[in-house]
Length: 290
Ligand code: PPS
Image 1 (tube, rainbow, N blue to C red):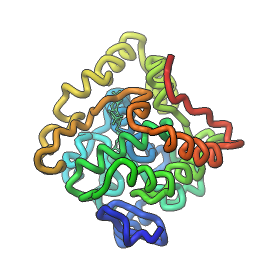
Image 2: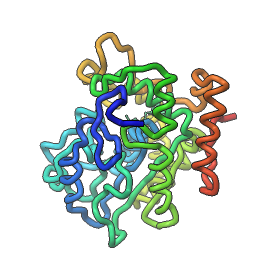
Image 3: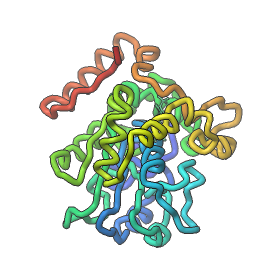
Image 4: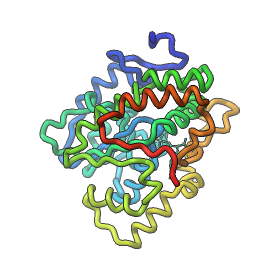
């Protein structure tokens, strides 16, 4: 599909569809970011639970930011969004640095010495599609035109900001066996939240008592985050969402919401695309939790 005809605002750099603010110039600027050993990148495709993970990191690692980093716009007050910030400002961020991004590996700063850390978060693609649809529909940024049916076509064809979810996932999965990448799944966070908080703490080298882990699991629960104006992005809702939108960033936070949206025909087609990409990867998505 010709990306110029897509029904939403976007940039397109070397064939990759990106949000309007991720221009070619911004990408060039980000590629020059001077990494430091131990930098931690939280990596995900949009709507896989990124802000949930950054909230856990915030509680675990207590990162401290210098002035001038734009975190308010995306509601996370200490783990900045890589694509939204100038590298010079990000470089002033004292170590240990925690930054989140939706970029593919090929557009990340150099890591030839393997001394950076990555946490990749994946989510079952059906729920990602539904969550992305509601988000793009609500945002002024994209001015998305079109129904769920059209959006799902975009999703299956990889015609959305940050491209195909499957390509993103497969690109990062190449690093899965490396010790500097922790691979997590949204559904596993639901199933064993405490176990995953401990896993993240181990990976980051943060000491954690049982009591602290319990407190983090409460603070990062869906209900707590929904009631928290920062994680739910309440103060910037008017700026971000279209007039009249009743979208809430903490929308449903469940596994299996896709069942309310896919027709039988869509499901059949979606499963074929998903199976084709996932075959042989060893990744088993859970689409429903018992
Ligand atoms: S973004 O805009 O790309 O950064 O969005 P992202 O944070 O990746 O994904 C948003 C979805 O994550 C859900 N979420 C949670 N689920 C369970 N528990 C907690 N604590 C939590 N925090 C965020 C959020 O509700 C979005 O999913 P949907 O399905 O739309 O509700």
